[in-house]
Length: 71
Image 1 (cartoon, one colour):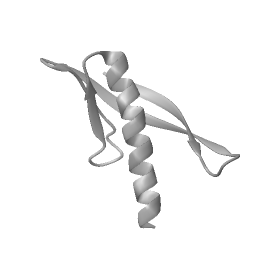
Image 2: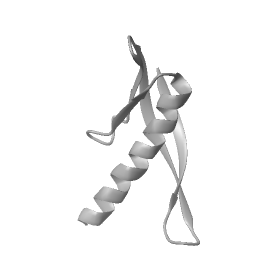
Image 3: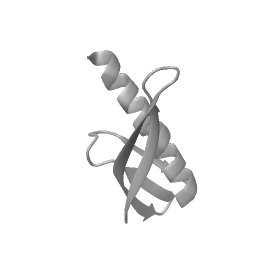
């Protein structure tokens, strides 16, 4: 299943940038696996669909923060 997620990412302490990311969600024996195809290595999981989607939001934010630090 493909889901489009809307995230509000902080630019600074007063401004946020609205970004939309496509994520893939797949039911597994352990729950749900979720990943963002456009961010290599950005994936997560959860026991429920809702938990997996919440976890991928955190993973995307962490991924983008890390990439920002590299630049």
